[in-house]
Length: 180
View 1 (cartoon, one colour):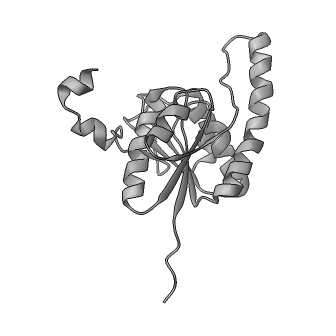
View 2 (tube, one colour):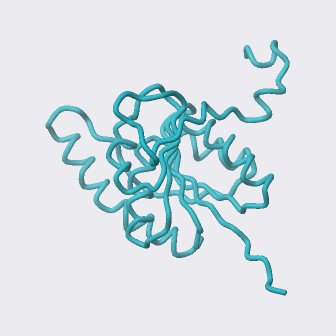
């Protein structure tokens, strides 16, 4: 009988808890189904704290969001962003995932691009009511885009409305604790 192969998933999510917490909910569900989950994101944003606290392995890489106006900040962001796909490729070579999930924030774009370059299937998770910039740019490289709510102009086999994932520990929190 053939040996069962361990499934592995790398999740890239970051910038805000609004991206990280739904990604942690997906990770909980995947892990409960026997999938080995690791995360990747920025070393100096909320994901660098929340992900290890939740018990997941975390690989940090430098990336940058894009200011909406031209200037020095935009040039700096472009230089930082240019190196991100190579850093993501190194992470993917080491982790050897079967699938990559980009869950929003500027760290998800380069990871999904790196997955496409390696021909590793990738999906996106959009937990907000509209696609953020990173997910809009990464969508052409993803096989599936999971949406919290229907998004105008986003339909067809690639797009699935699944609702907003909520971590189990958030569902079980007493209301006084949840208000803190």
